[in-house]
Amino acid sequence: MTEPPHKPARDAAREPDAPPLPPGLYPVATPIGNLRDITLRALDTLAQADLVVCEDTRVTGRLLAHFGIAARLRSYNDRNAARQRPAILEALNAGKSVALVSDAGSPLISDPGYRLVVDAIAAGHRVEAVPGPTAAIAALQVSGLPTDRFRFVGFLAPKDAKRRRQLAELAGETGTLIFYESGPRLTASLRAMADILGDRPAAVARELTKRYEEVRRGMLAELAAAWDTAPKGEIVVVVGGRADDDAREPGHDVDALVRAGLAAGDSVRSVADAVADATGLPRRSVYQRALALSNEAPQERGPASQ
Ligand code: SAM
Image (cartoon, rainbow, N blue to C red):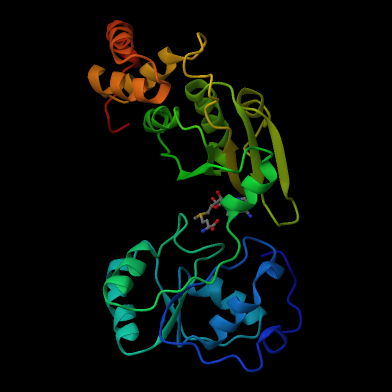
């Protein structure tokens, strides 16, 4: 939230003859940095809802105060979701309108809300999106990578072996890949991506819509060497999908994919299956290679939980 408070926008933004909000659940997107990215409809909905469900009442309280909106807030986050859900569903059953927001961006996108939406649908309630900013799409738009097909991955596992296994499963994806990342983990993740996916074009989008917004584009290995210290702020990594001719290219790093699977503790058979699927190479030859690699350097292996 980088903007200084200004004149409350609520009255200017409200549609004068806006009909009352029908009962239902409204996932409402809020800005990912620049407060002027809030939509007029988001302001209408937040002002009119009987209840605003949010991750952190202090964060959303500040946002609403900035726009001169007084709302009833209830917290709903990873720690209390199971406890809070029945009361929110009760409010919906009682005919209330409930807005659902996260701290920033679009709720449900690497943020809470999925189970609440599922339960509200199952109970027959109206569920209507009030769309707006999301970091994944903003990063994709400025990445310079293909936008016609993409896969949103979200956060990779923090532990290296599991992260490498997740990447091995993504190696065959031909659409552009979108990851959420943190500064302290950025370099290790970029290195793992270069090792497992091969050196592909990528973009690191940091602090989008904020004062220190920065987008660096380059090959994965080059980007992995670009920061001497962990960069600050919020980060999205966008990576090109598998090129059509990668699969049968002699240089395709089957060994790296196999080693990543073995290091994560997977069996030779399941590693071979996953790598054959990812690369399009014949199952039998990948199995034989996996078998050979499984007999080398046992110290590289680790338990599946790592
Ligand atoms: N629901 C949010 C959305 O719609 O983008 C994402 C929530 S997730 C918990 C937070 C992550 O989103 C951050 O760790 C970062 O990867 C990404 N992110 C959020 N705001 C960002 C920004 N302004 N610039 C770059 N990445 C951002």
